[in-house]
Image 1: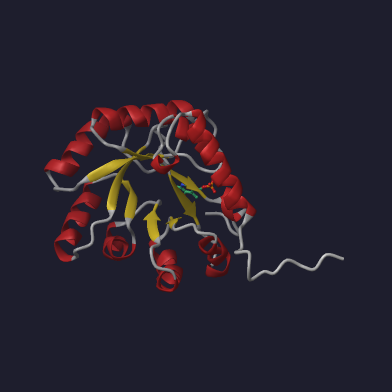
Image 2: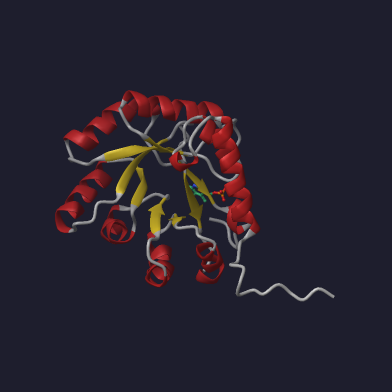
Length: 233
Ligand SMILES: *Cc1c(COP(=O)(O)O)cnc(C)c1O
């Protein structure tokens, strides 16, 4: 019998993360893009510290959460253990959670209304931290979904800058679940280009390769890395 491999010599390498990395590299080659232009956000919402730790041990450093409260409960300790982790808030942000969000997160992906801009501007006057901001575009104009309607995007982005003095880094979108994502990625990229925004947060487990084809700089991948979520979100 072969002796078991020495676990201390091989860092844990979750197969999900490896497969996603492989697919990102392939999509970048196909799109003739440098791999370094795409940031993988490992979406760890609903997973506890024990499930996240092996992914950190494999070298992943950028993570996404969709709830401020949940992130506050598990990330400070994980971040204290491993320096250099960046945390992205990918879910909707209520104004009363802005203080905690600015303190904890390095990027906020769902800026979508004036009241939130106002709360962020106020908080920036109190805290020196400046998370990167993405404006969410509701490309499918779905009533239940957060985000600015495509028709209102240019005016909203202008107000972020001119009325609230916020620096917007890019745009984010979540295509409707039952539609081909490509037209939604293309629309988001077009709105970003005409507003001079360099970053595009788009693409999830099912469609990140397509998103990379359409210029995504940040892909938000959860279940393909961590497996099926223990509870619905
Ligand atoms: C949960 C979530 C993701 C990741 O979804 P998967 O399909 O598990 O990859 C990406 N973006 C947002 C906004 C999410 O809420």
